[in-house]
Length: 343
Ligand code: KG4
Ligand code: ZN
Image 1 (cartoon, helix red, strand yellow):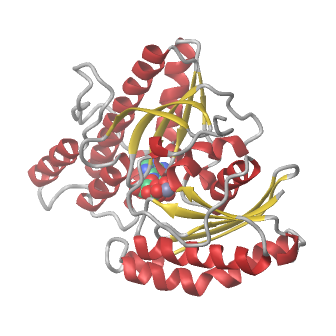
Image 2 (cartoon, protein in one colour):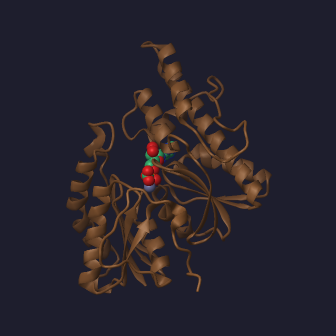
Image 3 (cartoon, helix red, strand yellow):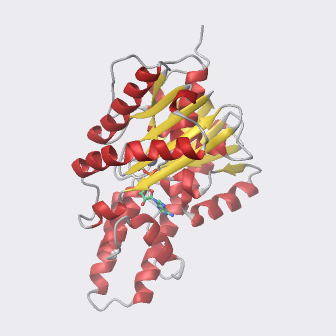
């Protein structure tokens, strides 16, 4: 079964074709970073309009790259939520209509399920069950995963998501949008011991997170340094912040693995591309006889391949979207149906 995946939930137009037998056949991505940079963040209306402009040429590109025509497609998967509603509507209406025109099934995919399953596209995919740490610009969640659609939420951020904390802190340090990867790059040359920021909520039981206080601590430090802050100090602050987020996430992952007696951890979403997070988890999990799984960086951030894969799994199990297009700005992950559906 060959499935076209369409991702338009935020500021990336992502397309891919996934074949349930041959794997990923083609992928293409257009990032809107340049479009939104002048505003310091994503402008939803501009995002929607740009998705409209990019979709058709990108679909033609992935079809050509895969050596296929539209008629060779067996299904279409589009992101149906959560995300920016206008942006979602573009990909969903387009995908649903194209599937109708071609007489093939369509499916609306949960964006975070797409992230969660992305490591399945790698050569050494994790077996169920596992703990998933979902860390993106909008979500920070720990989930106990026993199968596709079998998700038990263990904990989540009570305020800022991990990616959001990276982005806001990057702004405080004067880094350009999108801040997360820029901050990580600056942190590479920083001293990890000079600034010790708090590890929020690690001193009490539970698996929830809170990152907004950490960002405020960085703000206080930046203000204390004043206008004369040198480049090395900025890098040291960036490193101190990154260490705090990474250690906080790692402590909660260890706790979740122990509490649920799991030996596999999947990290997914944009922040899972962070090198320090990967290294810290590799080191800690090796000590507890557990393994960490993640996708290549391009499949950690938003992309069409994860949507094509998640959609293909659900289409193959017989799920199909109705003819009416429905999208959701908010959509709890643990309300998704399990597959194969219980009979
Ligand atoms: O999953 P994603 O591409 O989009 C959402 O679904 O939100 O995640 C984007 C987030 C942004 O906040 C971005 O700053 C962050 O992931 N991010 C990173 C890195 N790469 C992307 N944060 C820290 N280190 C990175 N290397
Ligand atoms: Zn995402």
